[in-house]
Length: 68
Image (cartoon, rainbow, N blue to C red; front, side, top):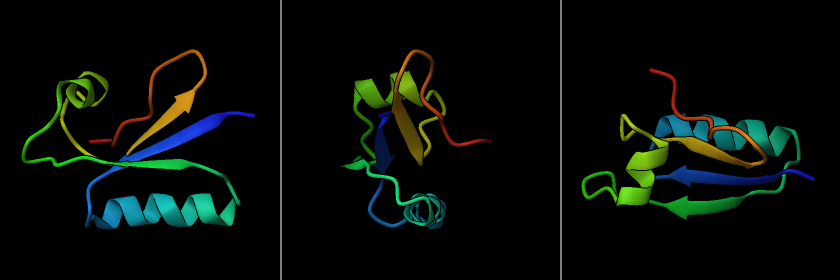
């Protein structure tokens, strides 16, 4: 099974779309909240533009960051 982690901020319509899609697929996932006004270093490494949502997939490869 692939481990999924949704990295999000408290209020964001784009994150809500991802949550709806994951719910429709009945996917299990963890959630991490970030303050996009004070981005932690680990967050900017996986989301160079500093945007949410990011869906971290526990498998070889890169996280799926917000598409600009």
